[in-house]
Image 1 (tube, rainbow, N blue to C red):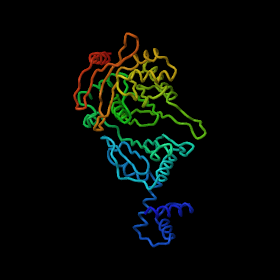
Image 2 (cartoon, rainbow, N blue to C red):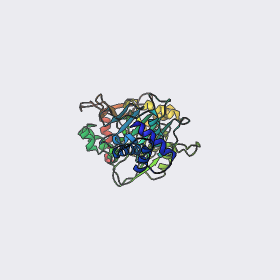
Image 3 (cartoon, helix red, strand yellow):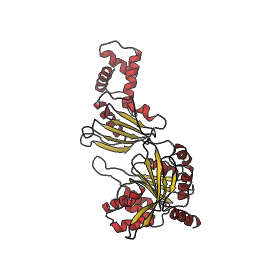
Image 4 (cartoon, rainbow, N blue to C red):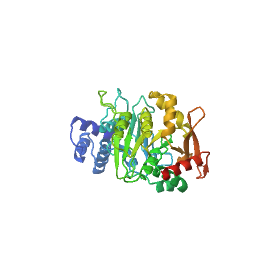
Length: 384
């Protein structure tokens, strides 16, 4: 089969035209051996997958519940359906096949992927997010990561059913949204930050206008008034880039009732904190952090890199963010809300996070030292 594929591919490449079963049959017969209809159709289907969609990964992307498909060279393909990584039976014929697929997917997104530019990060037309790195920069071969968007956002009841949080905690986070508290959803890569944020944004009053700023458009809240802004990398000539800081400033001029930064990972933290300190209530975003208690140091590091001093960064954080919702992944691979925390001022004038609620993997919830502070904050906003 592999020999037939390569022979037909070479012959079709010499004579450009549409890929059809007839052309495949002619190319096979020219190779000098008789072929039946079954062989023709098998080779045609294999070639069609190679030039349309995600090739041999297409069946994996269509499986119910798949969030990620990962390719580590020709021999190792994994998927994630919410319970950790699972190995699959999909294999590529060779390294060149993986490289060819990565380059074709990058081209579909209007980007170049070659030895001069061996990595790419982009959103495809169907909403999937592609990241790829070519060998030999990556090993054991070309690496492809595909993040699959859900057609519709998870609702909060669905996240309760999935075990991400319990019913009581769901009511608490819903109150955070409804009372227009500013919040950050934190956690590591793949812990479900975007999923939880989409569910929470779906709870926002339909009369409010959501303006989403993202590096790659992934948030899909079920809400009637959503405007999305997506950053853009430079083109082949190195021009035309639009970063998140620019988009946050544009969003502030678009009359947002809720300003949302999908993933804070750079200087845009300064603009987001400034916005939340100037009357933009209910704003939110996601942030990579090891724990809720690590958020001040993470914000400080990002702000310092953007030119904002330590004291100013902590001062802005103290008055901008009301609540942090931290997600983690258990040993079983399941994503769960692990902690709810609020910022407090230390005697040194800096910000520290205190836990208002700690959630165990088995679903148990233990109030933290800041539980009363969070209750008071919610009560004050409800009565305002």
